Image 1 (cartoon, rainbow, N blue to C red):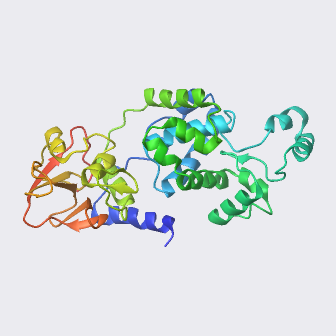
Image 2 (cartoon, rainbow, N blue to C red):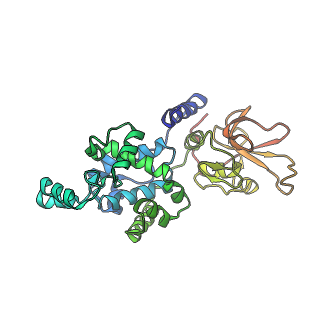
Length: 331
């Protein structure tokens, strides 16, 4: 099964289990086009046309979280010299002297010609054109200029961020590593970090919803259980809840209880804490936590099983809780 099919099925599961009244998310959930244009000093029309394509590619691979999107926007701005659309290497020569003279310069000076840099992220060398073309289903070897097509370039970008682990560095807020994984060194790092910081300052205060919590939770079905894990690909029970709530709760179960309030009639996506005695955690009141689905099931990261839909723990006392400020839009 492809990752795209798996994601589509997972998103379908959300809709089959709960009625979504006000779906929230998408490319503009954290910043308007005007904000991205201003922060990156890029043409507004290019941001409007191309950021949704790149965001969609990140979403396809399950990595369209807030910090990864910040890193992606900063990467596009720098790699395209603030054009925010796919560009060819040394494109300024084309602007100054025309495409034919620019192409002649590239042929004479770039040892990997005709597989020079193209895209939102500069794809170079024939082997890379062959590999990424194969992975996204486009013949980039015979037709290398296809890497300049917006949706093709966006898919290359998303795949690169996923397979090279750039998103993992972004989720750790290791901006230097993000830049190194793309550029090979740290050229432009000051501007890169400045854009990321500005995106943090101008983040829109959009209400966080239970449907968004469930959307994120279902997107990680199949991830393994890893003790103290808090990022996609490695979650423990409380780290999973912290991630689905976008950091609005702490990463320790007893602390989650302390920052939430009782919810006797829970909705899908509310927090459910399990009180029982665990010999491995004798001082912990709530050894396990999950997302409430219904009277029988929870969506959680469970030891020995990983992230998935599981029955409530037998023998445990259940406490259903709500995170302050989260909008209820599920049944």
